[in-house]
Image: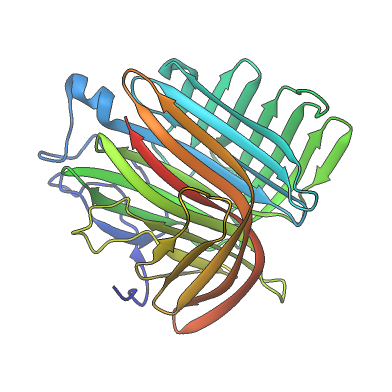
Amino acid sequence: MAAPTDFLAAPKAVADDQGAPQFGGYAGALASMSLEHLRQPWQVRGLRRRFVHKKWGYAFIASDELAVFFACSHLGYAANAFIHVVDLETREVLADAGVVTSASRARVAEVGGEGYEATLSKGALSLSSSRSAGQASYAIRARVQGRGEVGAIELEASLEVAGAGPPLSVIAPVVGQRINVTQKWAGMRGAGELRCGKRTYALNRSVGGLDITNGYLSRHVVWRWAFASGLLADGTRMGFNLSEGFFDPASPITECGVWVDGSLKPLGNLQFQWNRKDVMQPWHVHGDGTALDFTPISVHHEARNLLLARSRFVQLAGHWSGVIAAGGASYRLHGVPGVAEDQDVVW
C-alpha cells in the first residue's frame, strides 16, 4: 500500500462523541489516550479487562558511542521491564536486565504529553520516563545495580520537544476486534549523561525517541518493529518508526513514519526480512522506495513460559543504513543508531 501524502491533525480523544474509535494515523498528540469512553463492541469491562488491557512506555536515546533503551509495561495482571545499554564503539554491553513482577510495581499513565509517566522499580532495577505539567522535555532516568567488572548504571537524560516536530499518534484495530492506541516520537534532541562505574558518557549530542502505547490487545500478538534516531550525513536530526504485523491485516492503517528536521512524513507498508534462527545476521526492511539494512551489535533476549503468559522476544541494538523515501524525497542514512525487534507473545 502506498503511503498517504501527509497525516491529518490528531483528534483530542480516542473515541468520538458517540463512543466510536477515531481510527487513523495522525500528526500530533492526543489530549488523552484513555479507552474509557469507547462503546461496544470496542469496550472491555470487568475481569476481562485485566487480561486484555496492556500499556507501556519505551524510551530510546543514542549518541555516536552509546545506545540506551528501556521499557516499562503494565499487563493488567502483572508488569515487566527491561533495559539494554551498549557501547556502540567497543560493542561492550554495559547493562542487559529484565524483570517480571506484580502489576502494583508499575505505573503507565494513559496520556502521551504533559502528565505522562511510565515507571517500574524492583530490586536492582529502577526505570522512569516522564513529562511533568508545564515541561517541554521528557525526563529519562534509569538505575541498574552493578555486576562484575561493570559498575552501577546511572542515567539522567532528557528528550526535548522543541524542534522535534509532532509525534505520530495512531488509533487502529487489532485482530479479535480489539483496539490499540500509540504515540511514537523519534528524532528528538537528547541531553544528559550516563555513568557506568568510573566511566561517564555525555549525551549532549544524542538523539532519541519514545513509544507510548495503550490498548485492548489480542491474546496472541506477533509483530516486527524498527526504530531509530540519529543524524544524517549533513548533521540533520532524523528518526523513524516502522512496524509489520501488529495491526489487523484488513486495516489500511500503519504506524510507519519518518521524522526529518522536525517534519513528520508517512511511509507505506514495509516488509521485514530477517533470520529468526540467527537474529544477529543483518536485517532488511523494504517497500515503496524504501530500502534499509540493519547491522546488529548486541541483543536483549527474553523467552518466558509462565502460567498466564509466554513470550519470545528479541530486541537488538545496532545501526541502520540505506534509503528512506517519503513525501516525494529520499533520505540516505548511514550508521544511524536504532533497534530491530521480533516479538511473539501470548498474554
